[in-house]
Image (cartoon, rainbow, N blue to C red; front, side, top):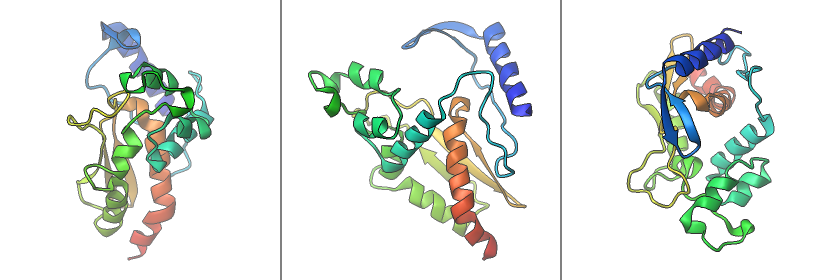
Length: 198
């Protein structure tokens, strides 16, 4: 699978040429402006890597919680995603709260569904159907005015692009490709058929 080979090449490049830098996760390697291309979206290719351990239930659970606009840790846990707990516990906004009351705040999905009163997912889906060749099919999560979140977003923007054919493409932070792929599949299966007919 070419995307997996591309992934391993990217990992090697980051390890060999990246800066060693401190982060909230400890010592990391970073290399700015790198891209991982995952071809075959919509042609039956599902980009799960075999060279690293992935937890599909957690990935799908995270996406389900995002699509619900979840602000509470319990929603993520309900859907099988447990990796937000450390961030929720470390957040000063949760000081003294019981586990069942921990919040993650207005992260990813909450911003998709309510970005200053705009449901970005509805706008995205409507515009993909109405004007598929626009360059403005965008989801934002970065909001400098937002302080009600346990962790500022890592993937701050996703831009969708439809080619003549039609094929739906998306660009975003490379480590988020699985949920974007799932969102893309959701769109293609449920919505694009409608716009292709019109």
